[in-house]
Length: 64
Image 1: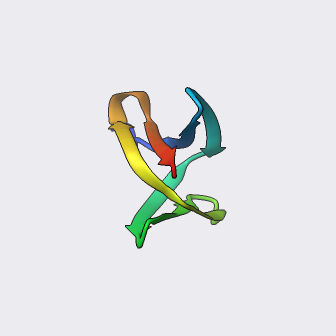
Image 2: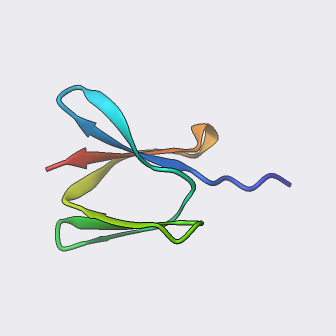
């Protein structure tokens, strides 16, 4: 069994930029996304979830 550990990308101005690899948790709250990777790295960004594609191990956030 393979574990799906997605990367998070930030969509802005028509392009995607890698934001964080191997993401374990995304908590959308009050217009922000609180993101934590499997390595413990954390980021907070003002964005909405635009797309989740688990087969590609990819989550795209749309910057506000």
